[in-house]
Length: 157
Image 1 (cartoon, rainbow, N blue to C red):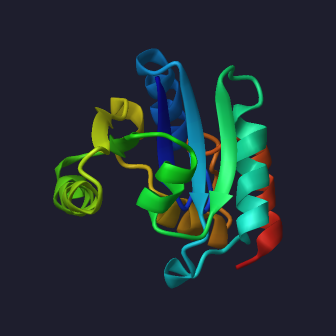
Image 2: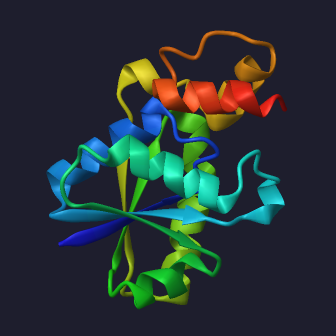
């Protein structure tokens, strides 16, 4: 069975990679779906984010990385996939994730959302925090892959 793990991934973090690895224990394959999502005003372009995700998962079998600029449900139909994988960090993630899962199910009741809890060492990691630390020159060693840290620091937000 295949699942889609959607997100903006601006940038991909070690927490995201933890969810991907957990997802591979549950599903035969994963599509990491990188959303265009201009409403979030991403630091990196869609192509840059796709490339960072690809480089981050290049050692994992059965993971594809694709960009999309549509409703997630439409992307899932195009991929012939009816399972969405979502990561939960801590309790404040739940209301928004529950709302999205409910709307997705109302849009297409064949699509199921499966939640996995991120490992305890990553429950506080968000892309926003990562970008804030990078902005002020802090170390990102425990938060993102090394090449992502270099890209962030060269970006000079």
